[in-house]
Length: 220
Image (cartoon, rainbow, N blue to C red):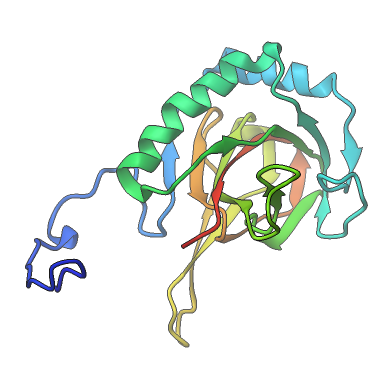
């Protein structure tokens, strides 16, 4: 390998020759089991159910056809300070170790309920931009870079409803490495916001989840 700053040749050891941290999956997402306790999951389900849930709407409160689920956006008020702190304190070290992306903001949370026949079609999360300030030039934007999905239901509570993540592989034979996952309650799934992902149709029971997004400056 050639260093771009010095043009010197280097031969670092290949990471494939080492044992990966068990959090890192071959599809390039991370699982953190027991991210939330059972009591914390139950608190969030109770808190989320008290919010104004809307069917099939996006963050701008306009109707969309790519999802069939009830959602509520949870503002970062004092009641959820404990969750905000936990997400920041546990996810940022993961980013700093593996991705090392410039993350500057945490968005409000999305509480989602999937009942029988509900689903979320394949999409990515990185297309929402915010101006850094009202006076900023148009190109000065934040974009979603890191997505976090936290399961609030036990897999025994619903059939179907698997989260499928697609990591790009770039070959005609295998353009994507697809992985369906249905982890235990309280697990956080961390993945790049530009990855295509979907929630398969729930065929029985109820699936509850919380989603968080980290923003940063546009890619350079």
